[in-house]
Image (cartoon, rainbow, N blue to C red; front, side, top):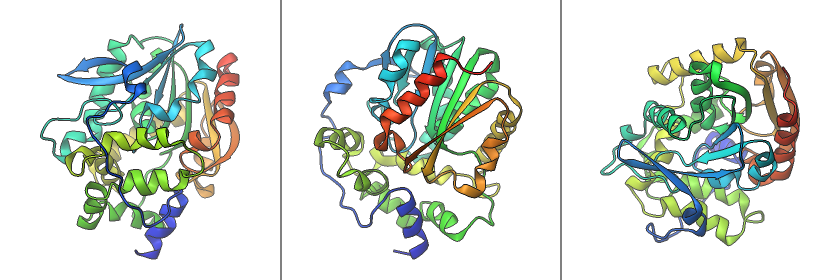
Length: 318
């Protein structure tokens, strides 16, 4: 494997090589049986709900699910109605039948999130808690629904748009997944689950947790398209144009909105390296807390994340 891609995989907490796990795609976990669901355009979106009061919506990214938030939500539940959906094709939400990659475009995730927020009545005093690709989805929803917002919490997400002059190791990571070899690594070998997520977690997760992350993508091929579509849509320069424009719009919004924000700054992290930390620090009405961890920080230090969110929810800045 090319050394630049190896560097970025390491930053994401990955160890090469990995072997995809076999499993029964139809098997449902105990967690799944406890989830609720809303039907949107004929497809079921699963979600976890806990607590009462104003909505606190947790948005995961790639290749995880609401399971990522399981040890964080108990800290927030005394302060509101916690809602954590599984994105389309992920966790226990439905896959698109006979899917092709375009079925998991960011714009479709946005449309499903819009409908989901309406169905669960997350329509006033909303706090969004976002990670990874949950950031672009949540920031865009916030931009279009600013009057419905109470606060924003973010960690290890896209606070930048990648220029074509970005460091080779960063460009190499995302360009790899635009290649045939990248598609094969994901669709045949389940690389985003096995390598980017799980190989770093062998001493931190139980066998049940490993099963929970693997289960939605146990079958090779189309079931894994959601985990391929996301990295292929990370904008490099102006490509793809629609997602590049989306990033530009929400970054401009975040730079101007006075909605209270909590940035959980992860050290060393992966998606917000030191040279880019000045961007969120320039956003108005921002509280910054620092924790130690890698990209999937909710598995590294869930209690530190939970306490930071709890303390912010108690009294967010005006």
